[in-house]
Length: 452
Picture 1 (cartoon, helix red, strand yellow):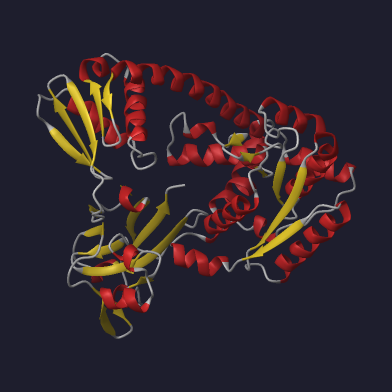
Picture 2 (cartoon, one colour):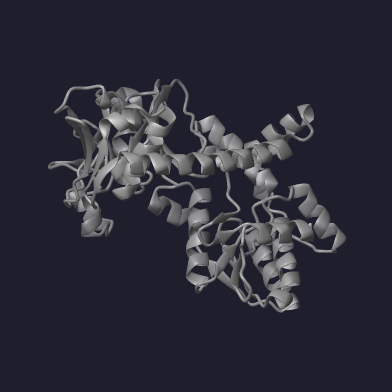
């Protein structure tokens, strides 16, 4: 496995000679094996290693045990170690995210703080890759999404990405490396754990090498994605008539002659040039395709203050960079809507029992649907908005002041509303007026996912 890790490091040019490497160490088998392997290479490569452990404040004495274990092995191996402490549950509520996703974001914020111009090594393996690809496939993803976890992403490196979890555990056993078991990994509350503990093992009963083959598929998609992007870049430059920070002009006839697959990639590149990287999706590309067939002068607006217009033989994509942050999106039931300005996916559904879907990158609230009585929207605040708190109501402006929400954030704060009634100040508080009770017959669930 050391050879496999070294081949991965060399193939993807992960760590130059003399590099500073921040290693994320949780205390589990993956991260302990990663630290041990990097330590074995460090002297010959003149690497400087530093271990970072993040205490999430979630698992009581078990989390304390992990911290003590990481500090002990780092002291034994002569590797500097720093521990960071967070109240992840509180921070998740503040950010309006699930605890798993909040913990992940906090870890990478700490790694970035500590890397000092070097690289960040994390211990994702082939099983993580297979889980990720399956999850994205189930949510709906194109070739780009199905490339899975990449060995190198900017300053983040993953030397163990082509090793299976079984190989890693066997490596620890052969090298007499002890490690910690996280008991929450066996709980199936979160989506990833269900894929890890239930779905992948079932697939391996049918196809013993399912994990290997799914991970290989991610690599095939990665190679195809690289090729397609190169082709799309050439077509984008061919279609490009002019560009600045506020507008991209593309030749409409040139676009019409492209295959739809390439069209969408060229559109995506145009948005990227305007600084919009994650706020557009296939529904917007379909609108652009339709506009190409329309007569000159037709136009429409997209999220992120983008205006698209067909002018004779040119497709103009303009971005309004003024400071207004207002938005209002209808929320049809049983659909997921992109709220680009707030970088959110919002999904709603109604059922006859209280049911939520937990995942590591989302949070949900449940309301009494019969108490609402009108269409839902995700919007910014409006004059006269009030929030039910306890037995009374409070002006939304006063609530924001009491919650010490910075003035510059208030206008862009996403709200789930039914007409003028506020159901949920996302990431902050939900209305007491629409909470389910013993008389509730229909339960409305609102699920929020942030762009990752």
